[in-house]
Image (cartoon, rainbow, N blue to C red; front, side, top):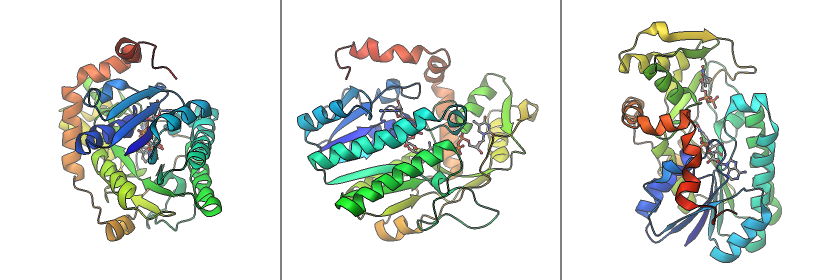
Amino acid sequence: MNILLTGGAGFIGSNFINYFTAKHEKINVVNLDLLTYAGNLENLKDSESRKNYTFVKGSILDRKLIEELFEKFKFDHVINFAAESHVDRSILSSEPFYMTNVIGTTTLLDVAKKFGVERFLQVSTDEVYGSLGATGKFSETTPISPNSPYSASKAAADMAVMAFYHTHGFPAVITRCSNNYGPYQFPEKLIPLMIINALNGKKLPVYGDGMNVRDWIYVLDHAKAIELVLFKGKLGEIYNVGADSEKPNIEIVKLILSNLDKTEDLIEYVKDRPGHDRRYAIDSSKIEKELGWKPEISFDEGMKATINWYLENKTWWERILNKEYLTYYEEQYGKSLEG
Ligand code: NAD
Ligand code: TYD
């Protein structure tokens, strides 16, 4: 079995590959990743030498390259992780978000339809549902109502995927997960940014009043949900994924400080993010009931493991901060594999 996996040098894709290629030795995974600022092959050191793992540098916007890959590998499945993923960047400049997240996804859909696949899994986000008030949760039937350019681009991609399912009978399935945390998360997102700033004695910038709520899940639990949906999910369905761990941002920041023995005077309340969604909370009872998935790692356990990981892998994040990680590809692979 051959899988085309896109965006596998990012945070969630690399955690998925490291888990999945070790477990399924007979399944070949081809990782197509453009290596934007968010792509870091150092995340994949554990998988690099595995026989069932191949890396290809290139974009999901490059139809010719994707066709060549389909001809060569005859993929059974596609898992699309590739995306521009950071809300703050989408506020500064939305075009790369619409290009990769929407046009990139439709390019993949077109080629996968042309060659035929058993399953196309679109990795989406709970952010497509918009923002909640103090109560309630997102279910799969909650109307899509995205508020940021990032979430709007992900919602557009989801609609394109579902339109292919309805129009062409294309074998698609979508997962919508809540906020992930864990090893290898790029230090622009809340949790790694706060850990690293605290370790460096820098201020921890909390947007607004710090009371925006996110629903956190350890990245490995998300990876296992994707694995299950890939093998057992029903075509044409959407599966929400979350671990029932709603936390206001300020609580997480304080938890990180106390775990690292740092004082709260490092906290700095800063100007709020424009259009900042107030609260996300996800109802994942469908994937639990229908596919038997449930999260295995509690928030406390996951946060301890994550903080320890950043403490033990200082070189990983220092190479990001000083941009050395950007040269790893050329050093390891040379230019020969470039798409
Ligand atoms: P990330 O930003 O860490 O990684 C994205 C990866 O995609 C990078 O390796 C990047 O190089 C690659 N990429 C970007 N543009 C590309 C292109 N045109 N062609 C090929 N590769 C390209 O993101 P992440 O946090 O790992 O998120 C992965 C997926 O999961 C995204 O689709 C995101 O929307 C979704 N998601 C993320 C979260 C979260 O909390 N991080 C939650 C739910 C869903
Ligand atoms: P983020 O990790 O960017 O994820 P998302 O916006 O996709 O949920 O942000 C998580 C929450 O943390 C969000 O409410 C914004 C807030 N936040 C801060 O308060 N300060 C920061 O420096 C960052 C990056 C985020």
